[in-house]
Each structure stands twice: as structure tokens, then as C-alpha cells.
Image (cartoon, rainbow, N blue to C red; front, side, top):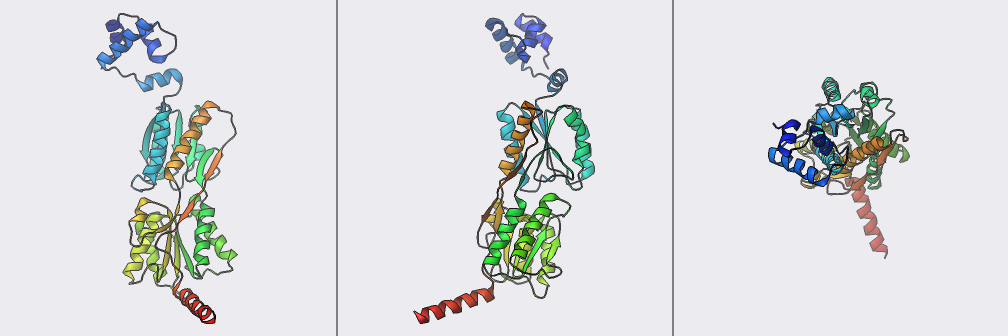
Length: 352
């Protein structure tokens, strides 16, 4: 690889002139600048980001840590983050934790050596980011939590209205006539799972309904977890007529369990997911879901980091994005309620 000395020799300028052109520290006369740029083009020279970072205290790198690259929700978050980072002259470095806290800590320790300007984190299970990111914040890096916030988090964050989204979805099911409602939540030590459960319970309480024992099932945010817990709900007496699955992967697993039990969705059991993944459009039936924009989560997180870098002492911002209930084929009134509505419709027609 070419170095700065070779660039200076080829361009016929001093080493200092090359440095000023590369770092834009001093205005260089246009003829000299063009000679340096032509030498760089000919040699394919690439400056060391780490070396530049050591001079500046930080590199033009934003690091992002996500819990599961195989979860189809997270690539959208990464894409939103990368688009905003690239548009502002930063490069995004991605690390995957597999929801393993030890792996998360290992990534954090390694990343610190690269002096990133910002750190975007979707915390793993049992994450303790308040202490673990202290070194980044002391070094002037902007730290933003996305989607979930760890215990006692006092920094910038971007999440979605999990409580409101779950409340709206559950209220919609109740409005259709469902009175036996169950929920399959994600891990309840995660803030997004806690908030979705709060929204579900709030809607049930508002309607004056009861939750029988076993109607709340906790699992992992994946299809296998949804399948296993829905199988338990299928054996309940009375069996729930509607299920809120607290992410779409859980919902897809629940749909598999409903079919395996020789039941129909939505005729026997209505089902609502949470996330609004593209997969929801190609299931049979299409999955009704609480939509949140993964792209907007990532894009907003990077913008918060850039704003923090521009104004270090600005107030902490904790942005909450709205959700939207996207109604598809997996919800319908319960069979009993439909019969009552049909009877009332016939009676009204007879009186007309």
C-alpha cells in the first residue's frame, strides 16, 4: 500500500502539504492540491482511519450492536442507521451479540479501541449498559439505545409506543366481541416486552374482563417460542378465542400451532402479531400486526447520535415513535358473537 511519503514524492510536494490536503487543515493552493489528489488517485492510497482517529480522538466510525442478525426485523433497523450515517460522512460497523450479554461486553471492549464517534445499541438480554458504556461517553462518543432500554438508562434513546400499540390491538379484538383473550409475550426482563404486556392488560382491565390462569405465556422472540406456547393455549379450557403475539415471529409460530391443532384462523382463533414484517403479507391467512418502522428506528437513532456529537451538552432525548395496527385476514369476530350479530340482523330485517 502507498503511504504519505510516496504520495509527496510522486506529487513533488512536501509531506506537510499532503497532510493538509488529506485532513483539510490548511488551505492548499489549487495546483498543488490537484497534484496531490492525482497522486492519490494513481496509487489508490487509503488513509488509516485509526491513525486519523488517534489525532482527532475519534474516528469517522459509528458502531452498531444488534442482538440477532437472523431476526428479520433488525436488518431494517441497520439499513436506516447506515443510510443516515453514510449521508453524513460516517461508516457503520456492525456487531451481532446473539442476545448473549458476554458477547455484547466483548464487542464493547473491542470497539473502544477503534475510537468510534458514536455507539448505537440494541441491548442484549440482561444488558447493563449504564456502566458498560461509561468509557465511551467519557471519551466523547455519542451513545444511543434503540428498541429496548436497559435498567436505569439515563441517555439518549429511540423506542416505539409498545404500550399503546398493544392496547390498540387488544381493544380491536375486544371490539370484535372477543372475551377470552390470551397473550404470548417476549422475555419479560426486556422493556419492550414489559410495555406490550402492560398495554394488553390495560385493554383487558378497561373492558372489565378476566385473565384466566395460563392465558399469559412468556417466551423468546422467535417462531419456536410462539409455537410451543400456543400449543399450551390450545389445550386451555376454555380455549382463548384470540391471541396477541408480542412479535410477528411469535405470531408465525402460533399460527403453526393453530393449524396443527386442526383449528382455523381466524374462524376458531384470531391472531395479531407485533412488528409488521413483510412476512405478514405472505402467510395464510395474512397476519394482522402492529406495525412499527424498523428503518425509522435506525435512522432516528443515528440522527440522535449526530445531534449529540454536534451539541454535547444538549438535554437527553428519549424519542418514542408511533405504531399502526394493520388489519389483515387473521382476525374476525368469535363464532358466538358472529351468530348473535347474524340473529340480530335477521330480527332487524324482519321488523323493517
